[in-house]
Image 1 (cartoon, rainbow, N blue to C red):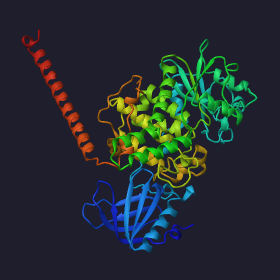
Image 2: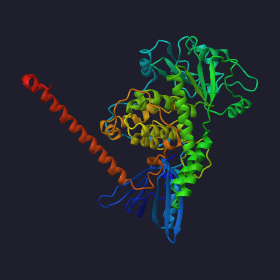
Image 3: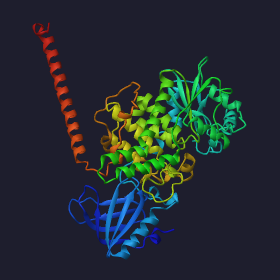
Image 4: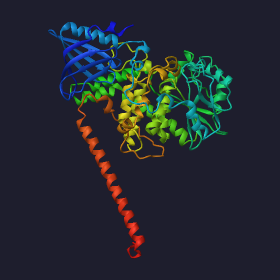
Amino acid sequence: MEFAELIKTPRVDGVVLHRPFMPTVEGTLCLTGHHLILSSRQDNTEELWLLHSNIDSIEKRFVGSLGSIIVKCKDLRVIQLDIPGMEECLNIASSIEALSTLDLVSLMYPFFYRPMFEVIEDGWNLFLPEDVFKDLESMTDEWRLSDVNKDFSVCPSYPPLVAVPKDVDDETLKKVATFRHSGRFPVLSYYHKKNGMVMMRAGQPLTGTNGRRCKEDEKLINATLRPGKRGYIIDTRTINVAQQAKARGGGFETEANYPQWRRIHKAIERSNILQESLIKLVEACNDQSHSMDRWLSKLEASNWQTHVKEILTTACLAAQCIDREGASVLVHGTEGTDSTLQVTSLAQIILDPACRTIRGFQGLVEREWLQAGHPFQQRCAQSAYSNSKPRQEAPSFLLFLDCVWQILRQFPCSFEFSESFLVLLFEHAYASQFGTFLGNSTAERTKLSLPEKTVSLWSWVNRPQELERLTNPLFEANSLVIWPSVAPQSLLLWEGVFLRWNRSSRCFDEAYDEMVHIIEYNKELQNKVNSLRRQLAELETEDPLLQTP
């Protein structure tokens, strides 16, 4: 298929662009296979380059012969294009609709994008399981790297290499895979070097209504327990939802078969509920009524902050079991690809200072989301404005980033990266020139040859000038476990994402610049103090009479 077939009118002059808190721009609108571009001959005006894949929905309005297209984006911005001529407006609108809903992954922009920057580090090779395992080997010899899934036949959503207990062979793993949802047998997620406790993740056990049992599964998770120790199974579903899953062939671990494990049920909502919540939240944020009561009522009705609280509470529970109780943990929900990953990755942010660095956070996203089989292509196909009926869309990753932002806000000096890094990841998960978030699993990315045919987001992020932009100026390395508050008054709306396009950023930019100036000035004064102390010490050694009493 040629892109030209979908573009009815490639260029229109005299188009006016309206964006909130920015001056209007008149210029030429061009449509290419992947971009909507508006360029102007006016001085000091920024061109608009918008990926078609970033467009969630469009609306058409007409006043006489003048047409307007309201473009609503997946990154939550809304822009308006005034187009002279009804026919041109209709042609542009239908072209945008066709180009923004292409289903074929190989036609997406990352396959056509050629970087204009030098790739210093190839991001595709940065966080390979075998390299991560070397770090684990330096701390313990109780685990091994299994290639039982090398052809993706045991579990289609797992990577080819997974860390499992040393005493469990591959034949046992294959049997356990038949007992877990989508073959997602328990694998190592995190090793806590302070006390040797571990966190594993999996899909739900397929016990069904008959109470099916799998002794290999029991052996596998018991292999992670120390003698005389108990473990915790954190099920991200309520007990009612878990009971209902039995009727569909799913279920949970019974006390009789897993006597060394204590099961705890939490209440993280399913995908469809989360998608509805995002839609309601964005609707509330765009409410122009200026009524505080109505705004707060809509915000509360969206339940978004409730989801943030529930996810953070569950992550804190997992971290508490590992660090304070000295117990190992197994986390699962139903599939093990959404709420499970939110909990395991946030628990690591709490426990492991390495995950709070820029490079460490990239590794966390790679391990616990991309390689762990979060279906990005399905979950991020639509955002909050789409008119299509939601299929498998859900803001699972955005909720995770929101939770990280909540912790970052409570511990502003403990993270090497700033809020900008989290916003960047949100944007690229939904629409990107990089191939990192394409596909739903490592198997799909391998089949699409993404490492050979596309550029990794990490190749861009790890350039010195980009790292400088994403670094938190307040950062001071903190080797401690950090415990976030989940009290309602401690959790705020993430304005940097949800109100980003609804308010002017000037005041925030000025405040940030002032903060950076104060930090730099403080460093200068500190250097002067250190220099004067050295001079004083030198004078004291030269003249004993000057020595301070």
